[in-house]
Amino acid sequence: MAIYNLTVNSKKVKVDVEDDMPLLWVVRDVVGLKGTKFGCGMALCGACTVHLDGQPARSCQTPVSSVGKNTKITTIEGIGDVKLHAIQQAWIEEQVPQCGYCQSGQIMSAVALLKTNASPNDQDIDAAMSGNLCRCGTYDRIRKAIHRAAETIKVEEKGIGKR
Image (cartoon, rainbow, N blue to C red):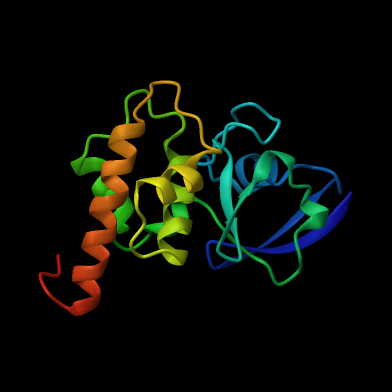
């Protein structure tokens, strides 16, 4: 066992875990944040997506020992802690979730996309979201929600029509 000082959703946490424990289990079982989901355990489905310094990462295959001391870990709980993120609001408005299992990973990937590409086209969205599987097949709604969130963010940045 080793002690790791992590920053999760802007909060400092100290965990005493095995070096090879996947970050997914650290976040869920040790820190107690249950929004990040276990899907396949092989980094193929995207349900476990978190951000490491703003970049999407598959936490099921990320050993805690590989997370740098100053790395900022953001989970689904950390993106809309004061008010809903534009992606979260668009998800609601477009009625994206069906079973909902993949949604935290989908949302985390979508947030990362919009941080790097404020006006993604359908091909950009498909490429960025390709690592996230939706068993219910709501890909068209996901794409619409990302476009809606991109427009909302543009409007908010201009200071027009703030919610």
